[in-house]
View (cartoon, rainbow over the protein chains, first blue to last red):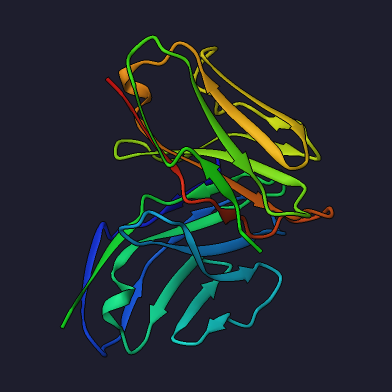
Length: 113
Length: 116
């Protein structure tokens, strides 16, 4: 079975500090994508960053970066210089070759001023 | 680009009534997905279409749920009859697939359904 696990239901970070959200997944496929989505209170699902499994280089989008460890099936998200607007639920997701997007349980991030 | 459009944004209905949720995917996208989000079960894929054809409906909870995609720019998710346990946020998402690994999906704003 293909699963995505986020072991941190809640995280907190001080404004301007750095925080890392953890994610592990399980699959036997070799070609796939991984994503982090952000869901603020408006409930809109917003794509934060994506990683192609065949790329060894970690993806980066401004203050957001990932640590992708394919052998360990680990895909953590690092948020640098945290801002109040970063407060949201963050979902790690894996998409299989059949097109099915499988989500983790989510991590609720709060940012303290 | 207007993004994925869903209607209505909120729906309140009584148990036993028929509910129809609507979705317009991003123009040019050929894959469409329906998800349900609840506190208990998180985000679940209900069904998805490629080129208007249903590919995987294994997530549809029961026969009361049905989905159609009559053309590339419109899809519906229908619940008949509705039950209180169907209360959830329903998301529609679309993506562009040209074979091989699937790429990111773009989500609509969701429909919050409350069944009394």
